[in-house]
Each structure stands twice: as structure tokens, then as C-alpha cells.
Image 1: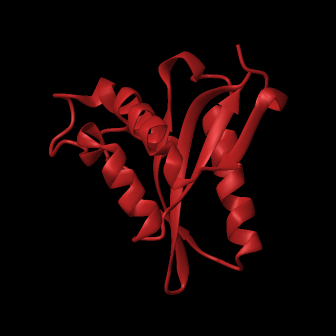
Image 2 (image 1 turned 180 degrees about the horizontal axis):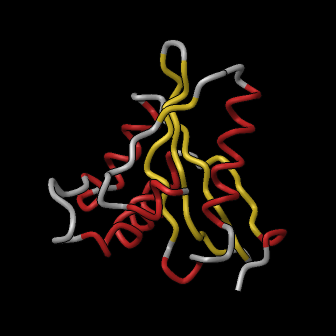
Length: 132
């Protein structure tokens, strides 16, 4: 479906909160009743995304493939590091390098912003993500 060169990453604005919340819920749906405590992503709302962008200073990078949103990742600068979280790729776009492109985008952002340390958390039950 998506070739590596077909994936475009761009920064999302608060007006795209509905799309971001939808991607989050769909991408994390596979973990419903499998991960405890449940991901907060399951209850992501557009108003929460807008709050994250406008007040909490999260930055969302959105992956677009063929003009269609395929996934996202978010980061926030913290004292001494960049915190990376909520990498989400829609099921139909998995296995085509979308997640890898999102992480490469975050790394470029860290370099651009002079953040030398990136931090994030992964639930231990997600062995494939931990291995990555």
C-alpha cells in the first residue's frame, strides 16, 4: 500500500483534533481488554487533543499516505529531554514503514530543537514494540 517515499509527515494543528483522536482510538482498539491498566488512548477525545496542543504544548506529527491520514506520534519538550508518546498507526497502514517514518521525524525534530535525549514508555506486554 504505502511505499516508504509515499509517507509524508507534517505537524498537526488544533483544528485537526478530531482526526487525531479518531486515529488514536482506532489504532489502540486492538488492546481493549488485553492491557491493564487500559490505555488512556481508548478514551481520547478531540477536546483533549486540542487541550494537549494548546495548553500542554504537545506537538503531533501526522503521517499522510496518498492524501489520507495514516498515523501520528506526539512529543513534548521537558527540562533536559524530549518526551515521545502515543505512536499510533492505523491497521491498514501497518507494515509499510509508517511508524518508522514517524520516529525518524521525531528524531529530526529533536535535533532541530537541540534535544539530546528522547524518552518514552512502552508497556512490557507490547513485546514487538519493546523489541523495536
